[in-house]
Amino acid sequence: MADYRYYLDYAASAPLRPEVGVAMAAVAARAGNPSSLHGSGRVARAALEGAREQVAAAVGALPAEVVFTSGGTEADNIAVLGGVSSAWAREAGRTRLVTTSVEHPAVAEAATTLADRTRVVGVDDAGRLDEGEWMDALDGSVAVASAMWANNETGVIFDVASLAEAAHRAGAWAHSDGVQALGHVPVSFADSGLDLLSLSAHKVGGPVGVGALVVRRGLEPAPVMYGGGQERKLRSGTVSVALAVGFAAAAELAVAELAAEASRIGGLRERVVAAISGIEGARVNGEGTSPAICNATFAGLRADDLLLMLDAAGVDCSTGSACTAGVHRPSEVLLAMGRSEADASASVRFSFGWATTDDDVEALVGALPDAVGRARAAYAW
Ligand code: PLP
Image (tube, rainbow, N blue to C red):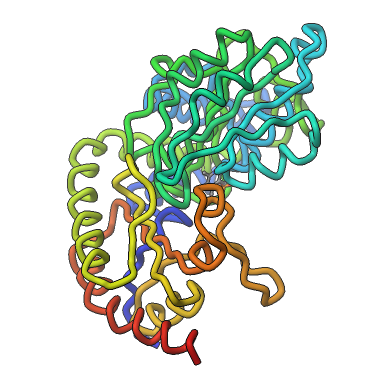
C-alpha cells in the first residue's frame, strides 16, 4: 500500500485543524463540570458559553438557540423524533413527518420508527427534490418537515428556505440536516427560516463526537433521552467543554474562509469532473452541488473494487452504499434518483475540504483511468 495518503473523503470525516487542536488543548486539561457552581465549574461554564456564542455567530443563530449534542446523528434524532413527539405536536394533533428519499440514515432510520406516519418525498434523476410533491405532502397533520441542506453522497443542495416556507404554510416545524452544508455553502439559520438545524463538527475540521441542534427560540422538541436536564433539557449529559470549544473554533474558521475555499475547492472539483468526463462509461451524479462533493458512476464495475484499486494507489475515497456482512448494497440515494441497481453499485464519492491540495487531486486524476480499467476487468472476470 502507498505510504502517503491522498485523502479525498472529507464528507466522511475531515482531519482536525491544527488551530482546533490548540483551542481544545487550552481547556481539555482543566477540571470542572460546567454545571458546577464552584470556581472551576464557572470557568468551564464560561468556556462552554463562549463556544456556544461562536457557533451561533457562525451559523446566524442566537446563542440560546444552540444545543450541543454528540454529533449530527443525535441532532437529527432529536429534531425528527423529538419534534413529532413534542407537547406542541401532541396538543395540535400533529402526528406525521414529511421527509425526502435521499436523507442520511440519521433521519431516514429515525423516520422508519414512525412507520406509516412518515411520508417520503422523491427526487428527480439529478437529485432535485420534487417540490410539488413536497407541497402536496404538507397539511395540518404534519408536525415536522425535514429535508437535508446538502446531500452527503451527491452534494446536491436543496432550497431549504423555500421548503421551510412551505412547511410553515402548513403550520409544521421545518428541520434541515445541515451537516454537509456547514463550511461549504452559506448557512444562516435566521435567513433560512428553519426551526431546527443539525450540525456536526468533524466534517469541517472539528473533533468527532460533537455537534449541535439549533432550535428556534420558544420551540420545545421532546428529549429523546433523559438525565440531568442539561442543554435546555433537550440533551442530558455533561457537555464536553473541550469538544464544544473545538467545534466552535472549526465552525468559525470554516465560515470565515468559506468564500475563498468554495472557489478553491470548486476548482479542484472541476478538475475531477473533467477527468471523469474523459473516461468512457463514466458520469457525474447530481446537479447544483456543493463544491466539496463529487459523486460519479463508472458503468461496468463494482464500487468496492474501484475503491480498493484507488486505495492501493494511496487515494482514499468512499462508496455511498453500505456493505453489510460482505453483501454489496447499492446506494439508496442513487436508487432514489432512478439509477439501476448496477449503476447504484458502481458509484464512488470524492470529497474535499480545508487541507485538500492540488497534489491530492492530481494523484486521483492520475490513478483513476487505470483503477477504473482494473476494477472493470475484476468485475468482468
Ligand atoms: N447527516 C449527514 C448529512 C452526514 O453526512 C452525517 C455524517 O456522515 C451525519 C448526519 C451524522 O453526523 P455525525 O457523524 O456527527 O453523527
